[in-house]
Every structure is written in structure tokens, then in C-alpha cells.
Length: 101
Image (cartoon, rainbow, N blue to C red):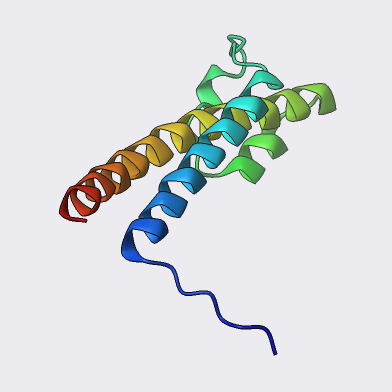
């Protein structure tokens, strides 16, 4: 049975900050692969909570795919903001812990 590795509070926070950094990089990379410009005929679906309902209203499968990518793009931007908020909090706690060490 492998020996359990116990991390200090500082090491745990360092890992947490590093994970937020990695998540942000991942979302930024994904965002680079997605369209970000909303064509006029799809703007009314921006921010929809009912993605399937919005897709069902569209005739063109190309528009369904574009809508999906645009919604993903917006979700990536929101995730980057959320991860940045949480990373900032974790980094602040890490700084306090490091100052106390």
C-alpha cells in the first residue's frame, strides 16, 4: 500500500493556485478555437438558458453548430472570469500563509 502524502497548508494553496492557473490557460486555449462574433440573426439567443430550445428554433444545422460554438465561447469567457476570481482569493490566502511561515 503506497504511503499517503500529506501536504502542508501552504503546499495545498500553492496547488490550488496552480490548478486555477491551469484552468484559465485551458479556457483561454479553447476560446481561441471558437468564434466570438455573433451574427445578427443569432444575437437573440445570446445568454439563453435553454440551448436546446434555441437550437430547435433554427432551420439550418450550420446555424445550430455556430450557435453551439458561440454559446461555448461565452461560457469560456465566463469561466475565465470565475476562475480568475477564485484564483485571486486563493493567492491572497497563500500570501498570508507564506507570510506566517
